[in-house]
Each structure stands twice: as structure tokens, then as C-alpha cells.
Amino acid sequence: MSNATFCPVALGNAARLTDSYRPAASALDAYPEKLQWLIRALQSANAELTPLQIKRLLQTIDISEQALMPWADFNHPVTDSYGRKLVFDGGHFEIMVMSWRPGDISAIHDHGSTQWGAVQSFGKADHYIYQFTAGVLGNPVAAPYSPGMVRAVDHSLIHQMGNTGARPFLSLHVYGMPSSWSAERPITGNARIFDLLEGCVQHTDGGVFFGLPEEQVNWRRCGLRGDPAAMRLHHSQMRDRFRRILKVQVNPVLQRKLEQLERWLYVYG
Image (cartoon, rainbow, N blue to C red; front, top):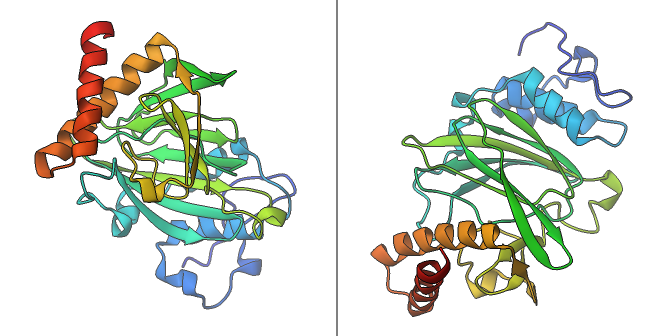
């Protein structure tokens, strides 16, 4: 690591990354240098962080996609809507890398107990933001990523992202919560998936995938409704994912759901 002092971003009373607290040797030394900077900045924060601070931190450190390739998972199973790898678990924060093949797209979701975070996409990513009011999911707003763009993540965010382009790419995700919460709940645990075909909000500790296996659903709350725009978008994306899955495996449950989706889209789409 360079001997120069480096301060990735001014975080108010939070972390400033300088040589004064860099350990001489650490397990972090196995990480690419800019990931070390990111991890140490998050570890050393002595105040609660905000989504805007994390966004600026990622913009300033400017990690490259190449540095994240050890965590790439472009060969993920087709049943996974995208590749998902944990890079670092800091207790009250986690750093993850997602891999997006052409055609990959997440289910509509939130981020569990996350209070602050940011996502950086290294490709041109589709991205939709939703509103959820009185049991109705709706008003999808397209907010695409350009390569290298960083967006802040807060607790209220309900969204999805994906890759409808021709080349695979990675994205870098930082999620966190107050350090006093870390013993009580996982950061992204019990994330909500909004399944408009089932009419339920599913809670999961894993990937936010379409057609989540029952064993990965912690619990669900039904009565979910969607406005017409959200229904059309959700059903067309779910249909496309189920078609991909059914090309490589026999799954009667997904086959029945695919038929439901195709009927709905034929009538309303």
C-alpha cells in the first residue's frame, strides 16, 4: 500500500482514512488496495453514516470493475436472477458484488434493516424505483445507471435493477445500519420481495430472485396489489425469467405460474 496519506471523503465526524490508523499487517491486505480503503473508512466511522456520505465515498475512492473480478459470478444458476457474492462482513455493514449477465434482473425488493448504503454499477443497468402505499405497489420510475454511476440507498428504497444490454457487468453494493443494531438483526436480512403474481410480500435472507424457492422464504404477508404499470412490468420480467429456467429444468410449479403470467399479459398486457 502507498505511504501517502489518503482521505477518501469528508464524513463530518465519521471516518477519515489516514496512515495514522492503518495497521501494519492485516487480513485486509489480501484485498485490492481501494477495497481496503473502503473497508477501513467504514470500520473507522465514529458517527452514524448517511446514504449521501456512502455515495460520495464510493465516488471518491473510485474502485474499478477489474478490482472486483475475484467476486464475479457470471456462471450463477439460471434460477438465480443474478450472481451474488459477499466481499466483506463488517458487522454493521456489508460489501457485496453482484454479477449481471444479459437478461438478468432482480425481483422488486427492499434491503431489510439497511439504513444507509450505495450501489455502483459498472455497466448500463436498467433500474426502476417503486412506491408502496396502503398495500399497493406502483408508479415504477425508470432511473437507469450509466457505467460507473453511484446511487444512494436508504431504508425506504424499493427498486430493482438488471441488464437488458449485450455485455455482462458487475455492481458494487454497500449496505449498513447503526452499529448498535448489529447483534440484533442481519443488515439485509428479511428483505422484502414484492411478488405481484402471488399477491404477497415475501421476506428472505438471501438473494432477491424471481420464483424464490419456498425454503428461502422466511415468511410472507399477502394482500399485495399493484397498479397497472407495476403489474405489466413485473409480469413481463417474471415471465422472461421463468421461460429461461424452464428451458433447462422441469418445474411444474413454475410452469403453472408461467401459464398464469402469459394469460394475464395476453388480456391486460
